Image (cartoon, rainbow, N blue to C red; front, side):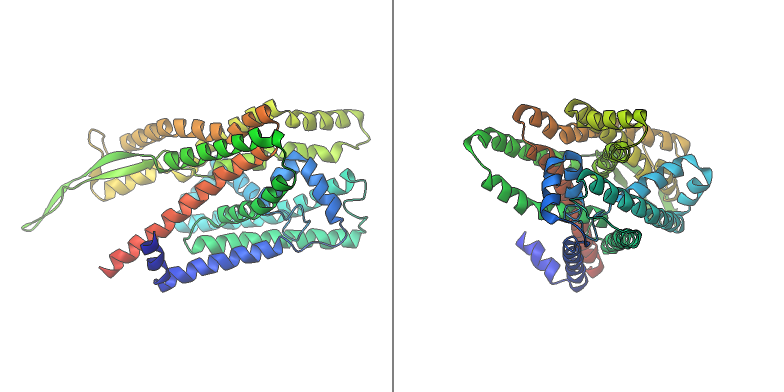
Length: 425
């Protein structure tokens, strides 16, 4: 480990990239503590401690929502925009053609995602301000005149766009996924506060809850590491070619298919979706229409039901694992590249047969990975039913994301070190 750290520090460009990423995370943490005027911080923190859905969302905004900061939305609108654009890519032929246009097409898709993030951030900013103002009876958020409300919405939207740019800047340095690292920073930053609260309120009746949390955390860490590193190697044979008196090709290699291609993204997508219905329902709690009020109250109570919440969470994580794997894994491109390089899978004809073989194989591989990821995601909820500890719900999901992000970041750093070793040779 020390040799790796020394190698990283003595590689100027890699060292500068890591320092830039750390600086970006520091800027994010500073921004998460710059509040917007007109709030009662004490009442706001108490309200978030009592609300499970907003409390969980606050974790992924890095505490920005609880502080009512300029970055209160975190990267939530960008994630929502990504989900919408990826769904539209699978539905609209025009977007599908653009997505297949290599790097240029991907840049266009990213640009559409950025454009969609702006209105979504403005809508969510207005929604959160309205929800907090209604919930607190005017005590959480003071009465804002139209100008103050407009300025607050613009400020919060600008904070989200800044975070989106910051995340993409981090991703360009190839030290990990920028959006995931921002969420990782928010989760890690909340750990000292949670430990302080646990110590301050600890009594002997919580011993079982703490032990259960530690066990769940260890199971999650070990399980995620094993599943993330698991892969199936598909044998690939390259045809032998003769050039003059030289024989080229004929080598045998492997095509690694990871058990969990989607990584941590399904968890992030699932959380974004599952928090959306009760949040929208908050707008209609005080509606003039009786049926709207009843529907809103029913939706809020439904998502507060731990059994329904756990089942919905499981299904969403499972579905998004398959969905995002279909987005990032392109069997047609892999088959085309193999054919261009003179490679083939033994016993499988090049072309469509290879595409079909890779698709079927990946679907079979994803199934145990999706079940595992979904089970780990809802395991803390099951433990909460036994212990009654709210800490387990947030802690289990947080540990899952933290471990995945750390593994992915370490993998990308190692890849850069290997690449530089080859360049030196």
